[in-house]
Length: 238
Image (cartoon, rainbow, N blue to C red; front, side, top):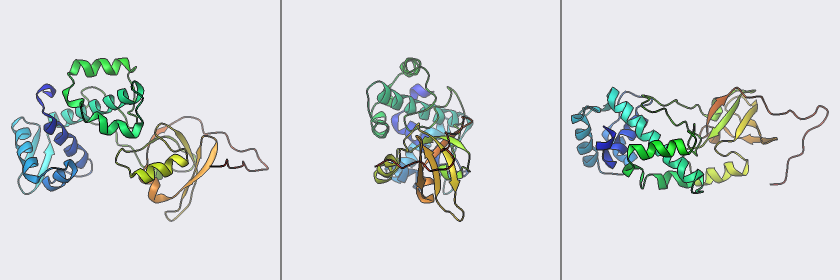
């Protein structure tokens, strides 16, 4: 099935999958906006996918994935994240460049090449952004909570979407909050107050608005070392 999918079909499946994570159907207007194409183009692609049994389309209502469509969408996202990993690990591209570059050639890969890349990379668990790479033929991809959903004492690994504003990415970088970094929540102030995070041995403060834009993979790993009693650790110069 995946071999016969065109680039537009695969990208449409991915967009429907993302737009229906928290709702039953994706509106064609929302799909067109997400894909950066005209609504008529989306309607044409959706009709082709419906003929293949990958989506159900109710005119004037929306589009939903079938079981086969959900599996195909997850496989397309898996491929994208594996290619991103290849670009970052083997070719040295920055994590926030890999997303853009992966889309330029991922659709032309034979399945056997994708499989070999995955094995050559030692079967990575996450893409360079920190999001999980789903298992082959998995029907769903785990939903990551936002950083702000954590509570004091929780330990997690940071994931940052490729769509994040570059200025926000630059700000997070000054705090050491990059994909793959392990953080511990030290404090969470009430009434949408800021978080105090332990990052690489230092306490960092992050407001709720930005913390909602960062996602995490929770871990049962040990908390970072606490400062010795009787004094506070000095903040390094930034």
